[in-house]
Amino acid sequence: MLDFLQYPDRETLMENIAEDVADQLSAAIDARGAATLAVPGGTTPAPFLELLSKADLDWSKVRVMLTDERFVPETSTRSNTRLLRETLLQNNAAAAQLVPFYKAADTPEEVLEDLIGAISAALPLDVCVLGMGADMHTASLFPEADRLAEGLDLDGTAVLLPMRAPGAAEPRLTLTAPVLRAARSIHILITGESKKTAFEAALIDGPAIEAPIRVILDAPTQVDVHYAD
Image (cartoon, rainbow, N blue to C red; front, side, top):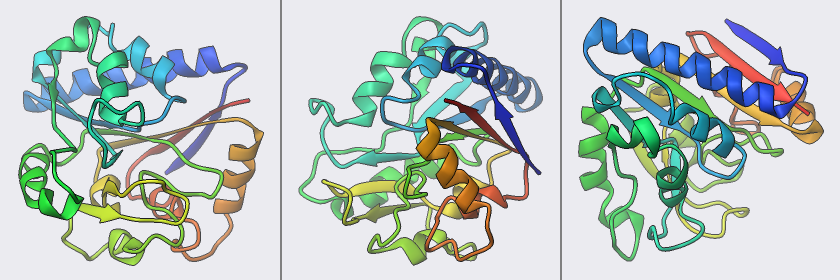
């Protein structure tokens, strides 16, 4: 089921999505004793992550991971992990457990299996928050990426894939579509008119390989799209 939620401004959007995610994490802890949260990188979700960091819940029982990461060390300003530490893993959420998406190596393929072990142990996701690009990519499932078909394969068994794409400056690591779709609750956070136009285009029937966000929009669980200009 897909719901499009439009807010009067970005501040209200960030407050509402933070409250929704906190409630869902608390419910997961109550039901299963722990919760796993996946969140996007980039600067757009930063206010949401900062608000969520102050939520009153047992963060020691929450595992946090990214939906995707650039294959760069945390010392890089392009590191999503660095941004995550500066936004979400503060305040109350400093007690959360970070599931890593990076390990030093020359290529992501060299450390892929090591990273998959910890990620697999934290699955399935209880709450997944995703962004979307104007090209309709989500996580690092980019149109024209080298392993996109594998990443979108709903019958595939891959959990994490290296991904290289024309619009990506570095190699990426991304959760695959089956992992993202299996989340118990899914949120998509978008801002700006160009993203709304892209979202509307993604709603038109067509192959996911041209608009990867489509594989999330028809997920078998509740998908809430949060939008503000």
